[in-house]
Image 1 (cartoon, one colour):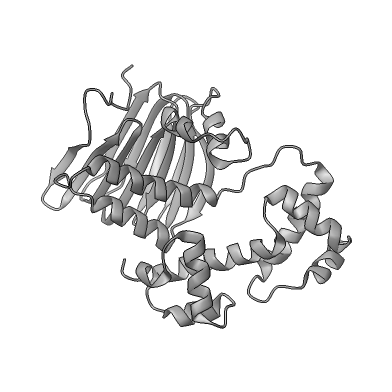
Image 2 (cartoon, helix red, strand yellow; image 1 turned 180 degrees about the vertical axis):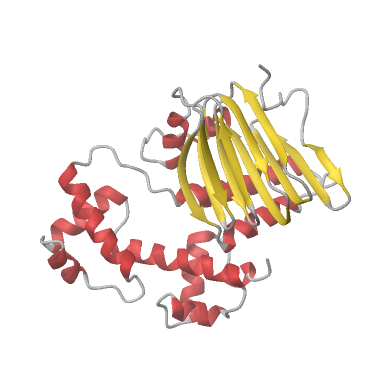
Length: 305
């Protein structure tokens, strides 16, 4: 079987029109060795893209209109990514069909990342997202869903910047690769990875505290109150939570607030100040500073996309 990814010595940045009819299209874009994406809009009839390869890859499917159905013929299973979501999948061999439905709203972006691209950024820590995903695709699995995330403003912003790279731009391949890296850093950081070396009791304790915070991260209970609800002491709770989730309780609250803000920014019907208050911050300036420190972009920039 031929590889889905091209050989960089033969071809560089390349746009291939898989289908074109007036405003309808499906484009394949080979950015660099190991990174390919498909983009599709406005289809008047269903189209199917087949993959029959022996490539180890991570697949990110972002659906901003309609839905995508993926049929894995090896394990005889199906997976659906609905409108407003990003599906994260792993595959070490492919015999699959990706069905793009007939839809006037169709707006789909599918990113394929080869294992040899991920290998450049391995840290040696199995709890790091890239290491976790890389080792997943070294196993014999045709298709596995890792997570399903809601589309947020930063994801849309990152993809819009990627799509705005022109074939006439100087160094378009490295520009596009840089924007892909920004996107996957954001998406991979949202993954909730099972941590090795955590026992059942620790996982249960941390999970219970996490559920409490998820119920109300705008005005969360104090650590003392959470510890009481979890039938433990503050010191143990803080230590175990950090061990399991690699983040402090306070840091987790901040993470939840900023993720919620990222989703609200996508709606475009609230001001930055209103969003800040909705997620628990009284001062817009402080909120914007935290957002920039976390995502590398100010929230006001995302309202433009």
